[in-house]
Image (cartoon, rainbow, N blue to C red; front, side):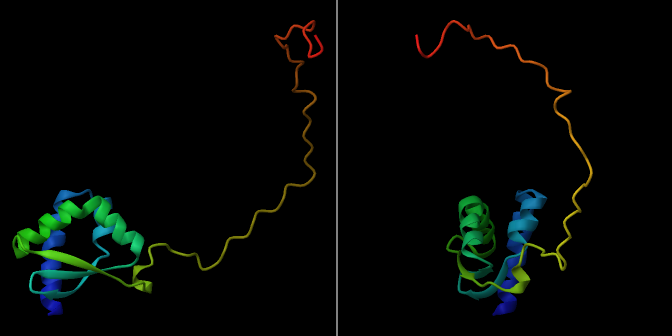
Length: 129
């Protein structure tokens, strides 16, 4: 059953790849795994609720069209959310880089650079009058 699910998903994935840009495909579609096929219901595995919501909000039409072109008009899908190391999307550096040393013995003088500013405020107007 898993082999059938994978085959259906591979076919759907190929269809989706032709209909969206490459970066979106690699970010949102390629990480998905098909885990079971029961009749015309494909269960796909995603790494988080956020990932699922993003798919539903942005790719529901292309996902449903691809699935229905493979399994027929009654085809549908369901999500299974599984967090695992395989789905970690961010690479965490092994070592945190050291902060650069502070520059020492550098004096900055602002006095030379500052010119007396001209203000367009009339001095005879004050808060008192």
